[in-house]
Length: 307
Image (spheres, rainbow, N blue to C red):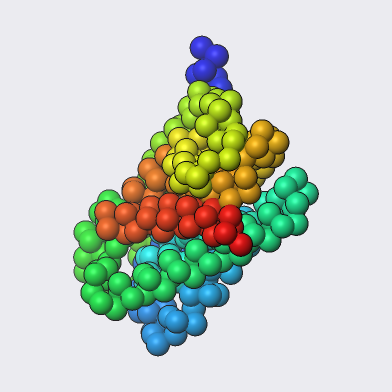
C-alpha cells in the first residue's frame, strides 16, 4: 500500500509541474495543424538550418525542461515542420543543462565542473544537430519522423470537406472545433506515454539505490566514463537530483571525467526519457537520440580526463 501511495504522489506531482508546458506545447501544435502553418515554418527555415543549429543548442541548454518535459515541445516543433537538425540540437541539450542546474553544479561541484558541463552540453548539441543535418540532406532521415497520433488524416479530410462553401463565421467555428479535436488527439497520444514515463521514474527512484551506484563508480577506473554513462540509464540521475549523488561519489574517489559522464548520461538516457522519446518518433530517430546521448556522455567524460 505504501508503494502505491508513493507512486501516485510522485506521478501527480510530476504531472502538475509539467502541466503548463504540456498544455502550451500541444495547443501550439494543434494551432499549427489546424491552420496549416507548417508550410510557413518550413519556408522560414529553408536555407537557414546551419545557422539555426547553434541557436537551438543554446536555447535548449538554458531551457527549464527535463528529458520527459521536453517531449511535448518536440512534438509541437515536429508538427510545425521545423527541420530535424535544430530540433535534435535542442532536444539533446535541454535535459543536460538549465539555469538552475548550472547554479547547483557551480555551488556543489565547483566552477570547473559547472563550466565543463555547460561546454560539454553545447558541444554535444552542436555535433548532434550538424550530424542530423548531414543525414537529413543525404536522405537517411525521412521528412516526417513524428508518429501519427489518432485520427489525424481522417480529421484533416473531414476538415477539408467541411470547409467547402462555408461563410467566414462558419469556417472559424469549424476550425475552432478542429483545433480542440487536434489538441485532444495529441494530448491523449503524448500524455499516456508521459504518464508511463513518470510511473517508471517513480519506481526507479524508489527501488534503485544510490548506494549501488556508489559501489560501482566510487573509485577511479579506466572504464569509468563508459560505466557511468550506462549506469545513468537505470539510475535516473536527472540534471538537478544528480548533484548531491555526484558530490558523494567524488568524495569516495570518483574522478571528474566519470562524474561528468554520469550527469550527462543519466539526464538524457534514463528509461523514462527513452520510453517517452520512443512514443512520439520513429525508430531511426530514437536510435539517433540514444546514440548522440550515450556517445556524447562517454566522449565528454574521456575528453575531460584528457584535458
